[in-house]
Amino acid sequence: MEYLSKQRYDEISAELKHLINVVYPKVKDDLAEARAQGDLSENEGYREARRTQAKTISRIRFLQKVLEYSRVIDPEVLPKDRVCLLSQVEFTNLATNTRMKFKIVSPHEMNLEAGKISLKSPIGAALMGKKVGEIAEAQVPSGTLRLRIESITLD
Image (cartoon, rainbow, N blue to C red; front, top):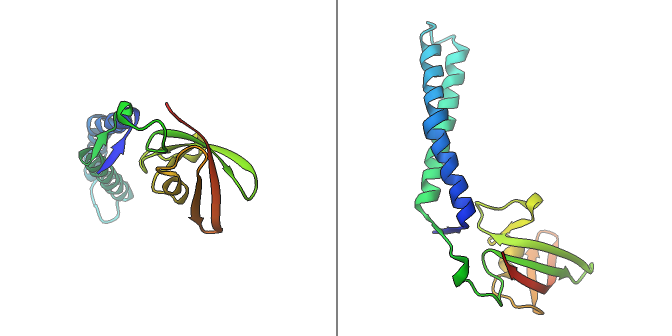
């Protein structure tokens, strides 16, 4: 089971609804049009329409499974003094004295450009459950990072 923020759950639901109600009917129409053009063995338009149909069906099924096995997390029940899902964490890399700030999110919400890391990533997993002032050790491909928690906030 995965936990999602309300915002991400709504985004996935909207994408699924759009795929089912808008994209898939258009894909079906494109496929029917390509099929009507005759010989299917040499019809590149038909093959492309079939590929698009397969991709669309695959994405619909994936999103349905994500929603089926996901729950919206209530931020009110999350601990305020420990790093947990949806925590905004500021920490210092003790080796380089570099400060970083990330929000801990589910793998379906991860977006490094937006400052969101997965709780299943090496850094996210190492930070989980830690309090301000504690040191987390994250095993990354380049070695072990020692990270000191500076602040924790919930958005």
